[in-house]
Image (cartoon, rainbow, N blue to C red; front, side, top):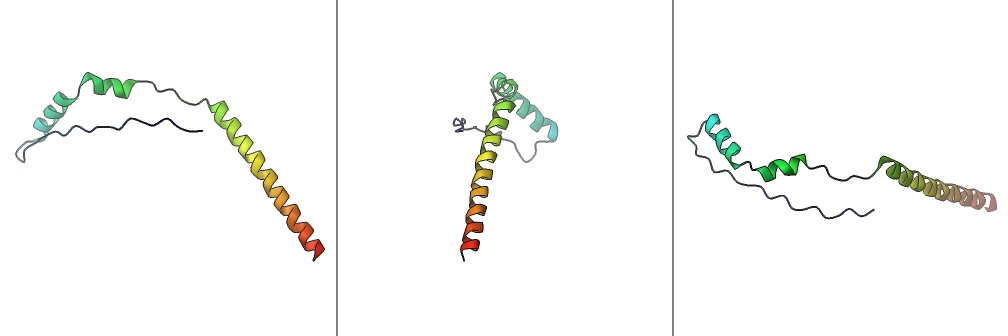
Length: 82
């Protein structure tokens, strides 16, 4: 289950002065926020169906349970042999 590489997120730097108050900082941030930024946060990303995830987890659980069962039987036979 390999995930595709995600794009690197570029963070835009907003230059503010020490004398800027909250209102001025907010105005600069609002001006720097573009339609592309909005699109990035409202875009629906395709996901993995829950049924598929559950099926994969159940398969892994079955495999590991079988391995554990075989190890326990092997230990039991070894104890009986000794």
